[in-house]
Length: 425
Image (cartoon, rainbow, N blue to C red; front, side):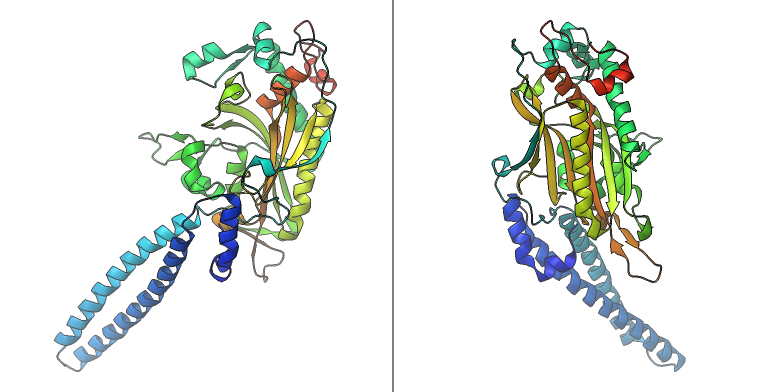
């Protein structure tokens, strides 16, 4: 949610942001609703004041044995007008809130402006693209031949884009996860495991409501569980909401969390090679970084988060590059996003494996998360930052394809060998 002061005082900034993001949004309608909402608040307060004055006048008239018929008629009219105003105000407030929760975040000044991914900027690269000297295979072909992956049987029981991991591939996934635990534990992160389902208020605080239907799975309420719940698309959704309606101690910030969770996403619209194997699936595991920071510290925190993710993939030996996303390519909640794209030999391309975003105070305004250093100070909204440390399944893809051998096996990255006890699968 944006600062209402910016919406009212600097509307051209909002219009430019919407153009730069290539987002269609009824901003004029939002401004009209805001004006109508504020007018109704003023008019409703005036009617309440009149009703209270009329109530006093009727009481005094009764004490003086005066005729109150005309006063009661006026009172009835005022009460009717007040009821109508209150109902209209409620409707207008609801419509305004829906728009306020749908408008995207402002864009950080360092973000390149452009219509799509063509305007993204490559910041840096790491690692050499491997030269195998033999015909490169995709991860699904290698894993299926080694009896490590079963897509067909998973499809039979759950539909497309689900999978069974088997044997040493399960162990490799757990090795990556354990390495992530050890890695972030050394970086002053608090480890946390979130709920995998959250309520509507929490989900709408973390994501743009209009995007939920395209991304998030809902859980049908049962007779015992009447509250509507949603499966998290990432642990960011749960952690962002954890401090909702709270005032944090500013001296405790930044507050850093490292979280492992399953992630559930509809992933609609992908096609081609994305549909093969486990690169783009409806269920996966991810180790997430999440930081609550003071406004003056969030840019530094953002750079540190992307640095940690880079170091993690360097330790795995995966060639990659860091991309600064353009205005129209990043998500609506983020003000600035870096992606790490890993080299995928099976696709002969760099593909996204990690995303790190600074959301400024956008989520905290929606969730009412504030801080102050002293109890007598004015509260401020915290900045929230989220970022993948490692998406397990996509990382398995990168390991399988970059570490494939001529005889169809997989070299285990050196940093993971102590967790598996083997150097080849």
